[in-house]
Amino acid sequence: MAPKPEDAWSAVTADVPTDAKESGTTRMTPEERISTLTEGLHKILEKAVESPSHWQVLLNASSTLWRYSGGNVALLMMQMAQRGTEEPTLVAGYKEWSRHGRTVTRGEHALWVIAPRTARVQQVTLPDGTRQRIPMDGQLPRGAVDEGKKTVITGWRGQAVFDVSQTQGTPLLVPRGLGSGVDAAELWGSLEAVARSHGFKVDVTDAQYGLTSGFTDFAEHRVQVGAWLSSEERTAVLAHELGHVLLHGPDDRLGRLYGSSADHRGLAEVEAESVAYTVLKVHGIDRGPQSATYLAGWADAVLDAEKDVISQETGSKLPGSRVDIAKSVLGRVTAASKGILEITHPRGFGGKITVVEADPRLDTTATYVGVGRPPSTDGPVMAGP
Image (cartoon, rainbow, N blue to C red; front, side, top):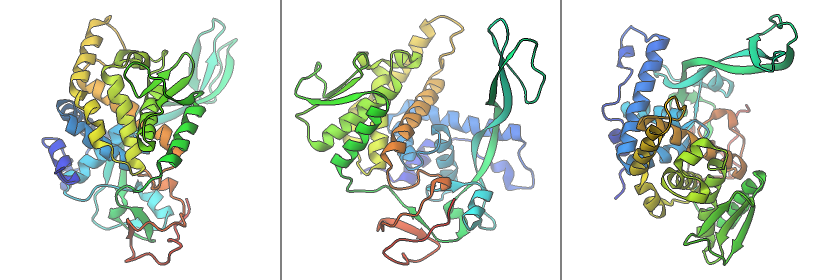
């Protein structure tokens, strides 16, 4: 029997530092906040490297909060698990909740995510061809060509957010768990659209490349899927191959390190299957048993990638430690999954209140926060963005 989500996260977050310092009158400094969040994330990733089941826990969380980065998904789930409360489903800042007619319940403590500090600068090209960034409205160097304004990341900060369960006010339809009964043929069409958006054609054919059920040919910009497969299996294979399309192109240095699509091995296969697992789970298809073979090699693949990095030249900008590699893979997988899901449009919000839209369809598996039952079969009225 699979462990309950809260039990799984309790195992993953054991020994992870908490924000206990803030239970009294003392508040963390911004530097302490980032340090504690980063340490907690590293602990989670260390555990994920130790066990494929812990990696799958991270993927399950990402399927609920897929609009968030992998690192912040882990942090949100970690904090809720440490407090012994239900998993987060819809998360926003204090002001954003207020815009949607809801207020944070008195006594609730914020969840924290890591957000970038940004600044607007002017980018210029100097006479010698080099590029330089100068403060906004600053004087351009002699002979420089202004290339326009650009937003750059200058650092990182902790950002306070709250789950919908910590708020009260205007009733909102909040899915608890993922959908079911997805039409494989409809999802196949959406995944084909993803392939086309990246310049790839999808061929369903009886031809077989090696012993594979699917293959991505970057030279021909073609994805091949076996015609002998069932409709659901074809859809799963296409989702897997899209993971290769988005992550393992010939010009991607990390993709080459992890194993290109032409040389299926190691982390390339784990990444592609992790993308497929996440995308399908968001659409209500649980591929846990079928994905087990790929994901079972997760830990060994991370260690092999670590050895490959060490064997390369010094000064490499590639992730060097197994925790850095795990963080890299989680970030790549969640970013690729988000890129696919933004085109396939699954039901639910992906964890972000800013994308809430009224949906006239009634979801009988949903929980109506702030109201006992749906007001009508036309669905609830939600506050606009």
